[in-house]
Image 1 (cartoon, rainbow, N blue to C red):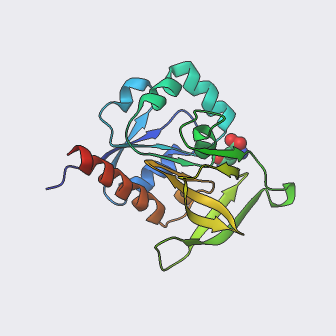
Image 2: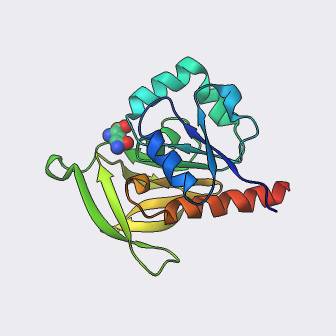
Length: 188
Ligand code: GLN
């Protein structure tokens, strides 16, 4: 029997409940993380969408910024969670993004995205999404929209500028769980 994965969802702000619900579908019991001690023993962490300035403020207040920097397991950031992980914020993912960089008329939109390694496209829900400005040489692109990367992997990090937790397609979360299994297989 495989031991069930323990995946944390940063629950200081934003749509952590939707992520928790997505993780439950493939049988993972999500753990809401509000203080650094709750990161202990987790196999992975999700940083949801919300408002990145609020995230950064609350994370600093609770010491979660340093705790997430010390966390060694895979991390999945969506939208504001992607911003929080970039070079200009926690500096954990080798990307630089521009916040709210889609024009005002198209600040929020949906589009079908080709998903690397999958037969069916993904539905991308973009809400005042960040736009990738730069990515380091080791960053792998898993989906694009109009030629711009919107789902990327950098080692144990997965980042999406859209909101897979707002659809009922669990494939991006499952891809993250594959990454978690790969990494925890190394530890097992
Ligand atoms: N616009 C938000 C920010 O800059 C991100 C939006 C989202 O997470 N849906 O933090």
